[in-house]
Image 1 (cartoon, rainbow, N blue to C red):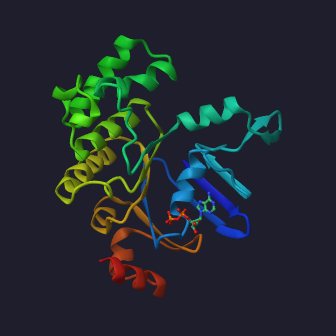
Image 2 (cartoon, protein in one colour):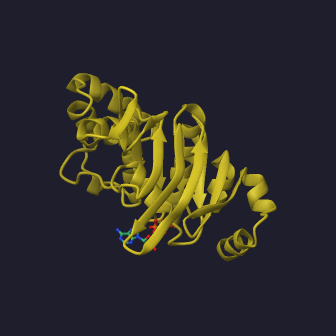
Amino acid sequence: MVEFADVVKRFGDTTVLDELSFTVAPGEFVSLIGPSGSGKTTILRLLMTLERVTEGTISVGGEPLSHMRRGDRLVPADDKHLAAARRRIGMVFQQFNLFPNMSVLRNITEAPIRVLGQSRAEAEERARELLDLVGLGERAGEHPSRLSGGQQQRVAIARALAMRPDVLLLDEVTSALDPELVAGVLDLLRDIATTTDITFLCVTHEMGFARKVSDRVLMFDHGRVIEDAPPERLFTAPREERTREFLHAVL
Ligand code: ADP
């Protein structure tokens, strides 16, 4: 579902991703861990097409993200192709990024109406189902500022799901939450991951969560994957000294 092939990303003289290759199978939940500055957020930004690769290719669902097919040839993607590719990928951010001046319901219906062309009735019906799913069925008419951080993050998750993404990117989704709200949001994400066939890429510092939910964990250092293993193996018997040091520092 997601493939990075020899991806290099440089900002000026700084190489942030260094011939990075990995794949994520459909329905897999993959966590990206590693020290700050190792390139994890850059991977999500590349998938959101907020950045472009310097070298190499990224594919989503077998289609290159930055290029498109014209006959037998691959040519640089135009805006329409990029928008279509981006539509398959949802993202939940650290800071929720809800629209403050819209009700909870409208936060969820806006993109399905504008981008997917759903009717208001159809979008609202789906939004109410999603609000029930995230435990906020009663709060549809309120503004986000009336909700706790954990509730706002649940709305952001519902909003991402409303676009029916194939791939959902999670960027430190609990780091802005009060500690007592973290477990509820993580449990919700685990339920969604186990009951849908969405593919997840999750940047997280929550090692307990990564261990419980992931099918695979990728350990990053200096823009490379230095270890790629199922969580039980990675957390109990890391093979790389750098992974051991990192886990020792964060656990
Ligand atoms: P992580 O998410 O693992 O903490 P990032 O992907 O955010 O790492 O950053 C990796 C490196 O790329 C860091 O050294 C960061 O300073 C650098 N970087 C990220 N974005 C930019 C940018 N727009 N311009 C210059 N350097 C950047």
